[in-house]
Amino acid sequence: MVRTVFHVDLDAFFVAVERTLDPSLNGVPVVVGGEPGGRGVVACASYEARKYGLHAGMPLAQAYRLCPHARYIPGRFDHYIAVSTRFLGILGEYTPFMQSMGLDEAYLDMTGFESLYGPLEGIAGVMKRRVREELRVTASVGIATSRVVAKVASDACKPDGLLRVAQGEEAAFLAPRPIRELPGIGEKTEPLLKGHGYTTIGDLARTPPIILRRILGSWGDVVWRSSQGLDDTAVAAAGDPKSVSRVTTFREDTLDPALIRGTLRYLGERVCAELRSHDMTARAAVLHLRWHDFTTITRHRTFPGEVSSDEAVYRAVEEMLSRELQVEAQRKRRKVRLIGVGVEGLAKDNGQLALLGDAPDERLAKAVDAIRGKYGFVAVQKGLTLHLNEAVPEERGKFVLRTRSPSR
Ligand code: TTP
Ligand code: MG
View (cartoon, rainbow, N blue to C red):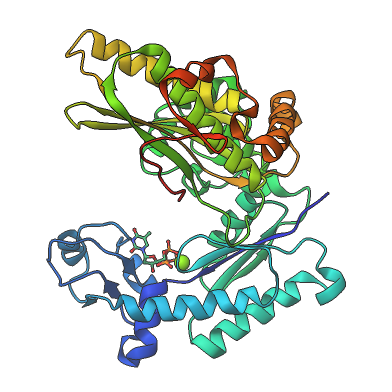
């Protein structure tokens, strides 16, 4: 089904709020972030200040050199939060399918809402007008068939813009734009890709995905799909977690590979069961490891697609664990005090997993979840966690681990 996704983002948000509080800031360069020449960085530069090259993240001292006549303001976070709450409240009146991405931006899934509102540009205009009249700040709205294209569209029409990219026009819309405008290409990835000769999003779209995978690892597949305007990430609903993790401390610090891997497997299964209970998938797996001297490390691995199966998550964290244990074996041979498994980059499962070849795993996992729901978590066990039966006490159908971490 063709989706309609809005990306709504306020323009120069912190500055816009400051201007509602002090109209003398209108029309002049304004920087929110601290005293001029202070040690902080620019949080928000007004569009007038951006003409001088100022941008978020730039050290204030440098901003001051480039634009000494700007008004510098420390910022008042409580006001920004109050405006943000009202902003998200307005958007939420038009759809229950809303995912806020911070204080001043949100994705809305408006698929099929024409029957309620008529042409969707119209309702986007209503949202913009209400934000302007009730909050006295301006918003830009991108409308497209996916999140990634809606986001690029809202950025492209800033400030105070409204841009719809029609179905079928996505790749052509993206092609001439600089790679930096593609979500997922940030400060580190941009120079890396430029070094390989990529300048526009179209350059990426024309490349065989295997080449991007060589440069960016599994993230390359995501970037390649985005560059075509392909993105089936769903708009997650309020209440869905942003990440899920489980960690545990061993009763005694250990180097027993079967115990460590069995525990890792068990934690991963718990994490994935929770992920699936929200009908969500993950883009990345996380390994947490603490040695007996309390040194703690965290390792991330991005998947080529979206996964929710025990197997995929275990394979990723096990590989990361093996590498760490190998390195450690040649160094201090410290014992393991704590391990943990997490998943990040969560999105709503929209039944597209078959495309990634992960489907049988996912179906099996759902069947296992159903049995466990009835008979308890340990009613179904795989080889690796059987080892835990002797090592860890079981209580009410779950292994009792010494520490549990909440999700999020
Ligand atoms: P953005 O939406 O990224 O930026 P913006 O609203 O200032 O400008 P634009 O018109 O391009 O959307 O971020 C929203 C707010 O988040 C911004 O006003 C200040 C804050 N912020 C920081 O504190 N640090 C940062 O590095 C960035 C990017 C934003
Ligand atoms: Mg903004």
